[in-house]
Image (cartoon, rainbow, N blue to C red; front, top):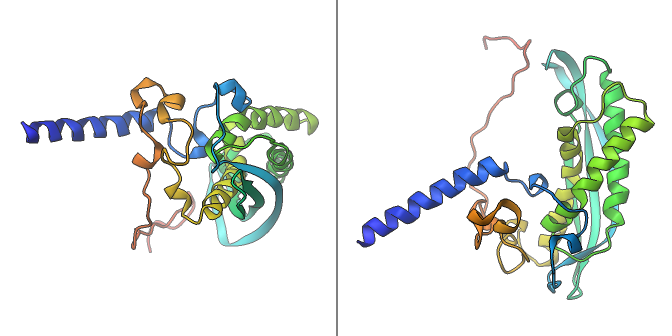
Length: 252
């Protein structure tokens, strides 16, 4: 009987993980969003571990490729990396700084046959500036996941505004918004973990989060938390892969 029960638990866990990944390719930056503020998400009593955002800044680094890389029918020879830094403090009085970065690969996140690489990259940079201000102005204490849940609609609205302001031939797509915003999200998670003296991957359980996954993904996940689906500690070894462009040589 015990063996059968264990098998049922393992089966449910596997199904939950599959359903979970179907519901949201899990990254805190990709959780479904239905509200613009934490108050709209329901009654929330702040936890002492919650953070307030004090400051957000950004800068860029440009890197030339060793050889051109063809992606989506377009050849690119460089990449711009968005770097984000933030300062936060917890309601219990701790403070920390966080860092996050993301390549702004517009050929992937904002592919366009009507606009040049420089135009779409410029749009991503303009959007990043809007996202920086939106994030820095967020006033409520919360866990980084809930901050992102509250702000994602504002990020998407800003994408629409940037598209109109720059008179883009095509609007900034949602994928592009998520890519650009992910550097800010990563910086907040980094700061959150540092404020508590632990890896950010140790802060996705009930001790730090106000809501369980059922709040975001539906009743099937009630009582479960993200730490059941992400690794808490780094693996000592990882497989290495090489990305090839569509015009890369087929023989090595």
